[in-house]
Length: 511
Image (cartoon, rainbow, N blue to C red; front, side, top):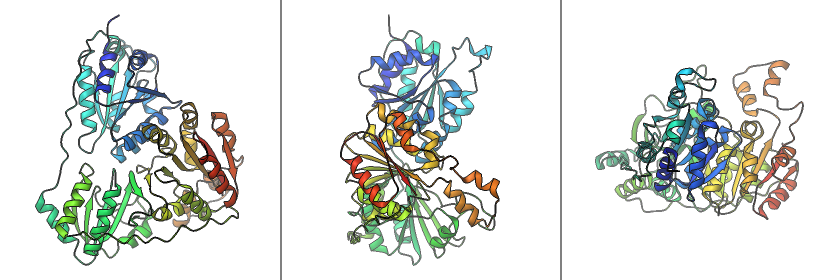
């Protein structure tokens, strides 16, 4: 039997550096499954839910710096992936969605699984329909190039089943990646001088802030006296070897307070900070209306190069003093957010990757990252719940020599709890700590901030008890061994247990 369009497509993916496919295939994708099987350079990872596939592809690409494939069954299967497609879009993650479709001759009969794939995929990013079995190789190469060029980095390739099984010669095409945009020397000089203004701030965020970028930001801070603010960042280098940089607050009142006295704002990687939601009596934009606002570059800029040029213009060659206090010892008593965060920060080994999807319980850890061992923090920028556990899968596959820890809220873990099965199946070195406060705590905070007094029926909509969820049993059911911790001492012991041997572990931390 000769080669097919699916062979042509996957061969071009591998040729252009795509090495992993996170898949939940169906009937229309079976020829693609066969093509994946023929490629020794492609690792195929099955997930039991499409939202795990998209989140894992996101985590993988953030750590590997190149796209993964996600393989989805028609429109409904792809629709299941959309929440983490949204997060990936906010992370500016390079990703390629491969979506099977009905045969071209069958589309007109409106079979039960036929849907408007364009409407779904177009929302997530750029949509391309394979033109034919022979044209799809060039289209895959173009898709790889698109994901690595500019700040819109998700491509969905829609492949009718007859294009997948159609005869095609395998011809390899090279991805033509466009050079990154970069501000002019005059724009960089103007922004650098603006940072010398009293009341100036530099606001940096977006896809990645590396160790080198943090060092340069510290030097710029020393040279100018400007305050450095981070917005939520998809991939951030943290640890006691670096100057302490803080993300802007999540809630509106402290956010506005942090920026109240700003006269000049130089923004890199993000436009002006805005509140997550609209609130009564609060503007949406967080900077004072009177502030001068300089949007220097978007997320597609080479941040290290840009910061080097700003530092050179300023003569900023003095490192910010790194003199962090030692980590506090975790109180061995009953668990609360403070001793949970202290124990977790102390347990993070050097070189680890941490997935933080716990706003209300993870704040202490996030504050202590400046005092912890050097590691990488992957955030969830888009706010769609359920990105933490799948991204841990992708990160562990991208960096098998680095331990991965997921600090995970109990409520959000349930959105993609199937991730635990993939962790066990792939024998991934991921330790998941479930912050089990039995509530959607963030909603309780928002209710209090809004001065709303809800009754018993309303409180049930923020309550995850009655019955309590047994995460240790859930993990064991998926093949992940687990322990429960109710005190700081028990949590320290459980984290030590998880670190002693590779492989997935789960710790339910009862708050």
